[in-house]
Image (tube, rainbow, N blue to C red):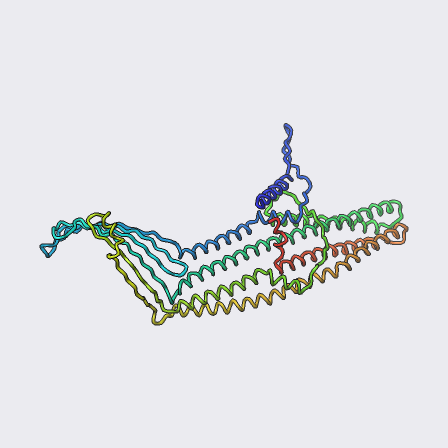
Length: 497
């Protein structure tokens, strides 16, 4: 049900974005036209959802996880059951020294068996075979003769790979490595989401900046029109008229640059979404200005609970500890308990020979101990020392990540706090600049001000409003960086991903 909802959501977004381009069929004799309506507003959630399910980076990250998961089957292959079998035919007509020896021997061998290694390290083998012998001598009791045999064997390591310790540990290490690969995949997805969020809010900022410049251009145009009327009536000198006209030209030129930067912000967002260039989009949200609802100790606690690199380093320490135990075990001598039991039957017919296989009197037993070890054992010693140093390196890396988390979260938290404390002041400054310009425009109507002062105040308002928008953008970026440093961004979208 959840996957179906995701697919439907993706289809709706694709239809929504694709529907922004309309083809207009021309009348006869007319050229074909494409009508592009105004950009469609999209929410941050839709952008994140579409980017995740349309991103090549996410696909590659998931494939990396799938590749890592295949290692589990590979490590468990030591417990696979193997079937084997064979058949052979021998014909021997070589000349013999004894006159009683046959000069024509024919031997057929057939065998089939199964072997299995248990989690305890025990190697079990069961084999059933038949050997058919025929020759041209009269000095044998059965001709042809069938020898059927059932063979059962086991081998149990008791020192090196003690009761399957190395095999089981290797499987455990692989499972831990897969968990690390899963965290790495999720971290790549979260990095993509953080990039989408930043790009989206940059588009919001570009949209707000375009609104500000449009407002300033409108004020500059009104001032120029007023000055033109006053100049035509001889109420102002030419220098004021030229100043207002120059100001209008300058603001219109700046507006064109801002419009282009706004389009660039739109294209950057579409790039993170892997969206076609023809589709026009714009942000549906504005800066919310929501403040933090947590303190620094709470942020640090949550970061240590959710930071994936910290969990990976903790798991690396555990992995290296297990590998060190395996390498230590491999330094021991190889001591194996072995045993076998076989039962055979010998008859002229295969069926009768098989019937005697289970006869208790035809049983063969073997038990023994096999020992082997290299005298220098340098390979095992070097592997053990390497694993020992790798574990120490993993512990150092864990401490390094701990220090980095404290620094990154602390810096990100203080940056958010600094902007939250400053936004109120910058908003008040922008409001005062607007009031200042409004009052000066009243004075200008009564001839108590001049064009230069109006232009300067317009510039002051432009600067203040731009600073307010920039502070709001930096505040949003700082919150994203804080969430990223705590690894909580992905959790905000769990319901839709």
